[in-house]
Length: 94
Image (cartoon, rainbow, N blue to C red; front, side, top):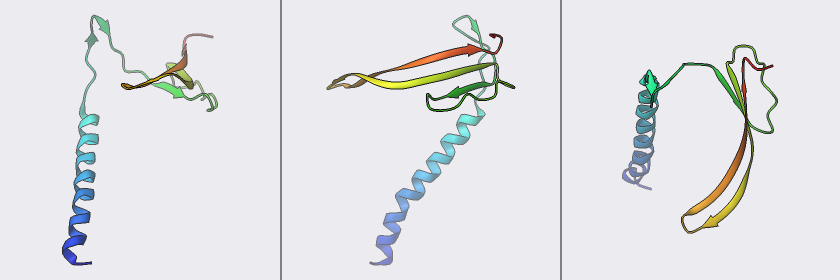
């Protein structure tokens, strides 16, 4: 291998890492809007778990969302259609 071919292999990797860092840093800077379509937006701690995960401690969370197992309902030329069940529980519910 020549030194030039090693440089060509590393360039796409370095570029991809730099783009990833820029995108992640930009996502952390965004602020929540005050309203979306007339509904007030609140900044709340929410626990999201999968079907196989154990329930997290409810302390410190305003809501819990438990996702079920995905089920494939259709396959076509445009893609795969699947359903995922979800259980929502507010921190105020007992």
